[in-house]
Amino acid sequence: MSKLQSAAEAIMNAQTAEEAFDIYRAFAAHLGYDKAMLWLMTDHPSIGKSAFHGLRTTYPEDWMKYYREKARHLVDPVFQLIISRPGAFFWSQAIAKLSQTPRFHGQTHDAWQTLMREAEDAGLADGMSVSIVNTAGEIAGFGISRSRREGEQNIEGLADVFLLSSVFYDTYLRFHAAGDFPRLTAREKDVLCWSASGKTDWEIAEITGISRATVRFHWNNIFQKMGVSNKMAATVNAVRRKLIIPDALRSQAAK
Image 1 (cartoon, rainbow, N blue to C red):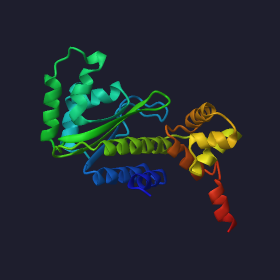
Image 2: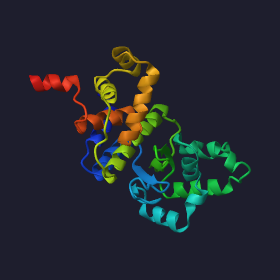
Image 3: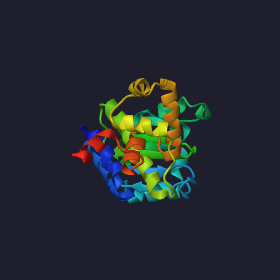
Image 4: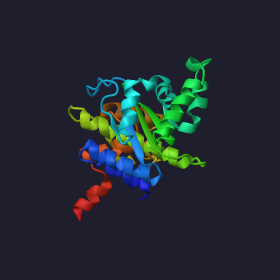
């Protein structure tokens, strides 16, 4: 099992949001980043939280105090890029990417560059960020950082951070949301069971006799019902909640 898979499963099996965040931080450290944070960028009525609440961070306290009191998010290119588009990016690319966003055309780079220099002086010289939009249109931002710049950009690491951030965010929402277990249809349970057995969408379509488009339709319904944004989180949560019992588990129980 890869480091990413182990971290994802550990986060989804965490008993508290704090435990899940510690696992997320440990993975960031594995990539060479010693600081991490989650910030709710917009109001989250789905869990009763307003923007900037639910903050979990290991960023320097004096920097966070200054950042909030001076409203530095208004000129932070990383912050502005997170709320402008979903995805993952390196901080070194933030100003260039933001300049390509229509709403920021014609704006001076001076304030953005000043903010980035301030962050570097505070020990946040280099990093990656992730923007995630859930099914309710609520936005969360993740950041991992280190105190000095590195010349090489780890694209694979950026992809891993994006996936793990999605898993952590789904877990975070689960800890703060209340409600009954979702009601899944028989076909949705079939899709989840075959996913838990390691089958791809193409294989699930072949096994169940439906089209891949129909498989994707069922996944979309599953995501909405379970409040998650990816197949790994949906499958693991379904197993943990005993909404499905994969054949592999049935076989083990019969021994």
